Length: 592
Image 1 (cartoon, rainbow, N blue to C red):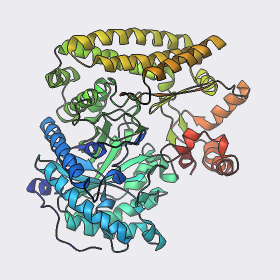
Image 2 (image 1 turned 45 degrees about the horizontal axis):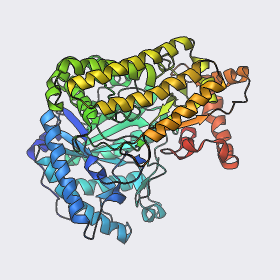
Image 3 (image 1 turned 90 degrees about the vertical axis):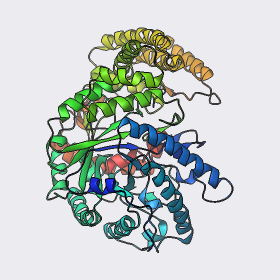
Image 4 (image 1 turned 120 degrees about the horizontal axis):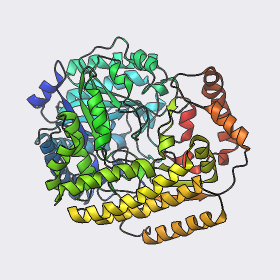
């Protein structure tokens, strides 16, 4: 392990934060500045694109100067809101080791120098620094040595925390790894496969954090792989992982629901099942709801969580994701480029709800002048309508309210739209019609939603807010309303032709070369050649309406199905849709 002088001094405020009983922690991700100028069309927003950062040549100095300037702007705004800490990616690109390849060590030297200056900018605003890391992430040279991941990580963190006293803590993710599109010297992989391993891992790391008086923030988020894949919702797995852990260095971080950042989810009951210090994860740049391209207000949704969470023990704060999440082309940068008005409003209201226990309406009125809003009453009405439109037209409400599980994951309440993809297909029609008992109600909800968007346009004009964002929402949601006619109405050539025509018009209005990125509409009217009774049997076998596992799950879906999928993936890979194979970690991770 590299030995060097400490990098950036550790302020007293950070020492106080990490000692004894946890002080309130209100954390926000600060990765936006590192994406400026990133030209990839579909961007992986799950972590900083390190390959985009210049490490030498004439471009290095101006790029990093711009990053620091953006961090200064960002830090000033979020600290004024009331945040006291930021998260950045990641430990691995800053922690040197003698076993790394020489070229990797050379890059790390530059990253350490540049990030140290970035840390100083953020600390000047009174913001503590938290860094993310995946377990386990390393280079090819280290993997070839056959190291023990937990031992290597413990030694690496011990040295790193000594060298970086400015870092208040580390945010560790164990249930998700890098996406298939990541092409970096460091590539993470899932390493912990069961609760016993996770518990032993934490017991091995926590003494290091206690020694350095730092925080280990352990995220329970998983994508459903291996036995530990139900950690975020299964009380037994959760209890096993945290068994015997009472370290003052530990903070458990949980998303508000039992799935990803969707609506219609009840508050995760694991908040009430441990006395360990914990924080709630919230997303204000809604990755499944337009990424801030149009208003997707979370105030009333989050207000319910905040009120319920007051009855949980030892909740010490929140972690707000204002930029992180999703594989999408949308690229507004919160608190930096002046365009992310809806994300910034969500962020302000969210912090007021969880930090100050404010009412939604009071928080919106307080923030309205900062948006140059000329009519706070009109803004509140616009947000109320946007909330209703999202809930009734982006989501299919009757389906969204169902509690459905497949293997170790809770089925997302949003099925037809995923990131920037809208799926309209015969198989989707068959699936939704199985679950939805009131198709006419779904059609009426679509009609009401389009009328509300018309009202939103007038309210945006009245309040001085971007009307173009509402128009984009209208164009997109008109497609969703038309798709709903296909999904829940009569199936005929006329509706299919209208969908094809509408898709062409949408693409023409928002071309790839245009200033505004759009949704991708995927139409597939190929009939699903499966008799209804077999489809119903299959759904009943694979999906359950309870959290606990059935006998059939333990025999078939958790074991036999994994083997079947591996055979299909190897011999008939074309049977698995390309989107499912290539997105994020790939669908095969669910079958591990």
